[in-house]
Image (cartoon, rainbow, N blue to C red):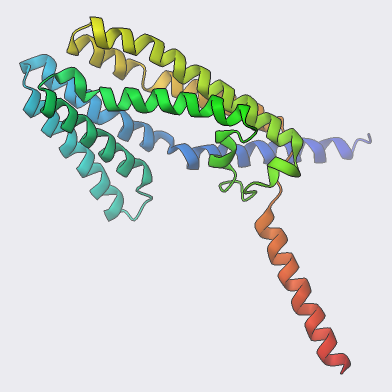
Length: 240
Protein backbone atom coordinates (compact mmCIF):
# COMPACT_ATOMS: atom_id res chain seq x y z
CA UNK A 1 0.00 0.00 0.00
CA UNK A 2 1.36 3.39 -0.97
CA UNK A 3 0.90 6.62 0.92
CA UNK A 4 -1.62 7.64 -1.72
CA UNK A 5 -3.68 4.48 -1.44
CA UNK A 6 -4.42 4.75 2.26
CA UNK A 7 -6.32 8.08 2.25
CA UNK A 8 -8.38 6.83 -0.70
CA UNK A 9 -9.35 3.70 1.21
CA UNK A 10 -10.12 5.69 4.35
CA UNK A 11 -12.27 8.11 2.36
CA UNK A 12 -14.11 5.19 0.76
CA UNK A 13 -14.75 3.64 4.17
CA UNK A 14 -16.00 6.97 5.51
CA UNK A 15 -18.32 7.29 2.52
CA UNK A 16 -19.65 3.77 3.10
CA UNK A 17 -20.34 4.54 6.76
CA UNK A 18 -22.10 7.78 5.81
CA UNK A 19 -24.29 5.95 3.30
CA UNK A 20 -25.13 3.31 5.91
CA UNK A 21 -26.04 5.93 8.49
CA UNK A 22 -28.27 7.77 6.01
CA UNK A 23 -30.01 4.56 4.96
CA UNK A 24 -30.69 3.51 8.56
CA UNK A 25 -31.97 7.00 9.35
CA UNK A 26 -34.36 6.79 6.39
CA UNK A 27 -35.51 3.24 7.08
CA UNK A 28 -36.23 3.68 10.78
CA UNK A 29 -37.48 7.26 10.81
CA UNK A 30 -34.74 9.02 12.75
CA UNK A 31 -35.50 11.29 15.70
CA UNK A 32 -38.92 12.29 14.41
CA UNK A 33 -39.92 8.67 13.97
CA UNK A 34 -38.90 7.91 17.55
CA UNK A 35 -40.99 10.81 18.85
CA UNK A 36 -43.99 9.57 16.87
CA UNK A 37 -43.48 6.10 18.32
CA UNK A 38 -43.25 7.21 21.94
CA UNK A 39 -45.67 10.12 22.19
CA UNK A 40 -49.07 8.31 21.96
CA UNK A 41 -48.16 5.72 24.59
CA UNK A 42 -46.61 8.37 26.82
CA UNK A 43 -49.77 10.47 26.62
CA UNK A 44 -51.97 7.45 27.36
CA UNK A 45 -50.10 6.36 30.46
CA UNK A 46 -49.73 9.94 31.74
CA UNK A 47 -53.44 10.67 31.56
CA UNK A 48 -54.36 7.24 32.94
CA UNK A 49 -51.92 7.66 35.82
CA UNK A 50 -53.59 10.97 36.72
CA UNK A 51 -57.30 10.16 36.46
CA UNK A 52 -57.65 6.41 35.67
CA UNK A 53 -59.99 7.33 32.79
CA UNK A 54 -59.60 4.72 30.04
CA UNK A 55 -61.75 6.55 27.49
CA UNK A 56 -59.98 9.90 27.87
CA UNK A 57 -56.56 8.27 27.76
CA UNK A 58 -57.37 6.24 24.66
CA UNK A 59 -58.96 9.14 22.79
CA UNK A 60 -56.03 11.42 23.59
CA UNK A 61 -53.51 8.84 22.34
CA UNK A 62 -55.44 8.29 19.12
CA UNK A 63 -55.90 12.05 18.60
CA UNK A 64 -52.19 12.81 18.92
CA UNK A 65 -51.40 9.98 16.46
CA UNK A 66 -53.78 11.52 13.92
CA UNK A 67 -52.23 14.96 14.48
CA UNK A 68 -48.79 13.51 13.75
CA UNK A 69 -50.07 12.09 10.45
CA UNK A 70 -51.64 15.44 9.52
CA UNK A 71 -48.36 17.22 10.26
CA UNK A 72 -46.54 14.76 8.00
CA UNK A 73 -49.06 15.34 5.22
CA UNK A 74 -48.89 19.12 5.54
CA UNK A 75 -45.10 19.11 5.42
CA UNK A 76 -45.21 16.58 2.54
CA UNK A 77 -42.96 14.23 4.44
CA UNK A 78 -43.11 10.43 4.37
CA UNK A 79 -46.07 9.20 6.41
CA UNK A 80 -45.23 5.51 6.79
CA UNK A 81 -43.97 5.84 10.37
CA UNK A 82 -46.85 8.07 11.47
CA UNK A 83 -49.43 5.83 9.79
CA UNK A 84 -47.98 2.73 11.45
CA UNK A 85 -48.31 4.56 14.75
CA UNK A 86 -51.97 5.39 14.07
CA UNK A 87 -52.80 1.78 13.24
CA UNK A 88 -50.99 0.54 16.33
CA UNK A 89 -52.77 3.00 18.59
CA UNK A 90 -56.14 2.31 16.91
CA UNK A 91 -55.81 -1.44 17.54
CA UNK A 92 -54.86 -0.74 21.14
CA UNK A 93 -57.86 1.53 21.61
CA UNK A 94 -60.22 -1.09 20.14
CA UNK A 95 -58.81 -3.84 22.35
CA UNK A 96 -59.02 -1.74 25.49
CA UNK A 97 -62.55 -0.50 24.75
CA UNK A 98 -63.80 -4.02 23.99
CA UNK A 99 -62.42 -5.57 27.17
CA UNK A 100 -62.68 -2.55 29.46
CA UNK A 101 -59.14 -3.36 30.63
CA UNK A 102 -56.73 -0.44 30.16
CA UNK A 103 -53.76 -2.83 29.97
CA UNK A 104 -55.15 -4.20 26.72
CA UNK A 105 -54.26 -0.89 25.08
CA UNK A 106 -50.69 -2.20 25.06
CA UNK A 107 -51.44 -5.79 24.06
CA UNK A 108 -51.50 -5.40 20.23
CA UNK A 109 -48.14 -3.63 20.30
CA UNK A 110 -46.67 -6.31 22.53
CA UNK A 111 -47.94 -9.08 20.25
CA UNK A 112 -46.53 -7.21 17.25
CA UNK A 113 -43.14 -6.97 18.98
CA UNK A 114 -43.22 -10.69 19.72
CA UNK A 115 -44.16 -11.56 16.15
CA UNK A 116 -41.52 -9.23 14.73
CA UNK A 117 -38.83 -10.69 16.98
CA UNK A 118 -39.71 -14.20 15.85
CA UNK A 119 -39.81 -13.04 12.21
CA UNK A 120 -36.24 -11.73 12.44
CA UNK A 121 -35.01 -15.06 13.78
CA UNK A 122 -37.05 -17.33 11.49
CA UNK A 123 -36.31 -15.46 8.26
CA UNK A 124 -32.60 -15.52 9.06
CA UNK A 125 -32.70 -19.26 9.69
CA UNK A 126 -34.44 -19.62 6.32
CA UNK A 127 -31.61 -17.72 4.62
CA UNK A 128 -33.55 -14.52 3.95
CA UNK A 129 -32.73 -12.14 6.86
CA UNK A 130 -35.61 -9.73 7.40
CA UNK A 131 -33.35 -6.73 7.90
CA UNK A 132 -31.98 -7.36 4.40
CA UNK A 133 -35.50 -7.31 2.96
CA UNK A 134 -36.11 -4.00 4.75
CA UNK A 135 -32.85 -2.28 3.89
CA UNK A 136 -32.16 -3.78 0.46
CA UNK A 137 -34.41 -1.30 -1.40
CA UNK A 138 -33.04 1.58 0.69
CA UNK A 139 -29.50 0.73 -0.39
CA UNK A 140 -30.72 0.21 -4.00
CA UNK A 141 -29.44 -3.36 -3.90
CA UNK A 142 -32.82 -5.12 -3.59
CA UNK A 143 -32.08 -8.85 -3.17
CA UNK A 144 -28.68 -8.86 -4.88
CA UNK A 145 -27.06 -9.51 -1.50
CA UNK A 146 -28.59 -12.99 -1.36
CA UNK A 147 -26.59 -14.47 -4.24
CA UNK A 148 -24.02 -11.89 -5.32
CA UNK A 149 -22.75 -10.41 -2.06
CA UNK A 150 -22.21 -13.13 0.58
CA UNK A 151 -20.37 -10.80 2.97
CA UNK A 152 -23.31 -8.46 3.00
CA UNK A 153 -25.75 -11.34 3.49
CA UNK A 154 -23.74 -12.40 6.53
CA UNK A 155 -23.94 -8.87 7.94
CA UNK A 156 -27.70 -8.82 7.42
CA UNK A 157 -27.97 -12.17 9.19
CA UNK A 158 -26.04 -10.87 12.20
CA UNK A 159 -28.17 -7.74 12.31
CA UNK A 160 -31.40 -9.73 12.07
CA UNK A 161 -30.34 -12.03 14.89
CA UNK A 162 -29.53 -8.95 16.97
CA UNK A 163 -32.95 -7.41 16.29
CA UNK A 164 -34.68 -10.68 17.09
CA UNK A 165 -32.79 -11.22 20.33
CA UNK A 166 -33.39 -7.65 21.51
CA UNK A 167 -37.12 -7.72 20.72
CA UNK A 168 -37.61 -11.13 22.35
CA UNK A 169 -35.71 -9.96 25.45
CA UNK A 170 -38.05 -6.97 25.57
CA UNK A 171 -41.05 -9.32 25.39
CA UNK A 172 -39.59 -11.41 28.20
CA UNK A 173 -39.86 -8.31 30.39
CA UNK A 174 -43.23 -7.02 29.21
CA UNK A 175 -45.45 -10.10 29.13
CA UNK A 176 -44.94 -11.01 32.81
CA UNK A 177 -45.73 -7.38 33.65
CA UNK A 178 -48.91 -7.61 31.57
CA UNK A 179 -50.14 -10.37 33.87
CA UNK A 180 -48.76 -9.21 37.21
CA UNK A 181 -48.35 -5.42 37.15
CA UNK A 182 -51.03 -2.75 37.05
CA UNK A 183 -51.70 -0.56 34.03
CA UNK A 184 -49.56 2.38 35.07
CA UNK A 185 -46.56 0.20 35.93
CA UNK A 186 -46.79 -1.62 32.61
CA UNK A 187 -47.29 1.64 30.74
CA UNK A 188 -44.26 3.39 32.20
CA UNK A 189 -42.03 0.35 31.65
CA UNK A 190 -43.20 0.29 28.03
CA UNK A 191 -42.36 3.96 27.60
CA UNK A 192 -38.90 3.43 29.09
CA UNK A 193 -38.29 0.41 26.83
CA UNK A 194 -39.38 2.14 23.62
CA UNK A 195 -36.15 3.86 22.64
CA UNK A 196 -33.07 2.20 24.26
CA UNK A 197 -33.59 -1.29 22.74
CA UNK A 198 -34.37 0.29 19.38
CA UNK A 199 -31.21 2.40 19.46
CA UNK A 200 -29.14 -0.62 20.45
CA UNK A 201 -30.52 -2.64 17.54
CA UNK A 202 -29.92 0.20 15.07
CA UNK A 203 -26.38 0.69 16.40
CA UNK A 204 -25.55 -3.00 16.03
CA UNK A 205 -26.99 -2.96 12.52
CA UNK A 206 -24.75 -0.01 11.68
CA UNK A 207 -21.70 -1.80 13.12
CA UNK A 208 -22.33 -4.96 11.09
CA UNK A 209 -23.10 -3.15 7.83
CA UNK A 210 -20.27 -0.64 8.16
CA UNK A 211 -17.83 -3.57 8.08
CA UNK A 212 -19.63 -5.37 5.25
CA UNK A 213 -18.87 -5.10 1.52
CA UNK A 214 -20.52 -2.20 -0.29
CA UNK A 215 -24.02 -2.81 -1.67
CA UNK A 216 -24.46 -3.61 -5.35
CA UNK A 217 -26.53 -0.82 -6.91
CA UNK A 218 -28.84 -2.87 -9.13
CA UNK A 219 -30.67 0.23 -10.31
CA UNK A 220 -27.42 1.70 -11.64
CA UNK A 221 -26.68 -1.63 -13.34
CA UNK A 222 -30.08 -1.64 -15.05
CA UNK A 223 -29.59 1.93 -16.22
CA UNK A 224 -26.14 1.06 -17.57
CA UNK A 225 -27.57 -1.95 -19.42
CA UNK A 226 -30.31 0.22 -20.92
CA UNK A 227 -27.75 2.80 -22.07
CA UNK A 228 -25.55 0.07 -23.57
CA UNK A 229 -28.54 -1.41 -25.42
CA UNK A 230 -29.47 2.02 -26.79
CA UNK A 231 -25.87 2.60 -27.91
CA UNK A 232 -25.80 -0.80 -29.67
CA UNK A 233 -29.07 -0.02 -31.44
CA UNK A 234 -27.77 3.38 -32.50
CA UNK A 235 -24.53 1.82 -33.79
CA UNK A 236 -26.51 -0.80 -35.70
CA UNK A 237 -28.70 1.84 -37.33
CA UNK A 238 -25.67 3.94 -38.31
CA UNK A 239 -24.00 0.89 -39.85
CA UNK A 240 -26.97 0.19 -42.14
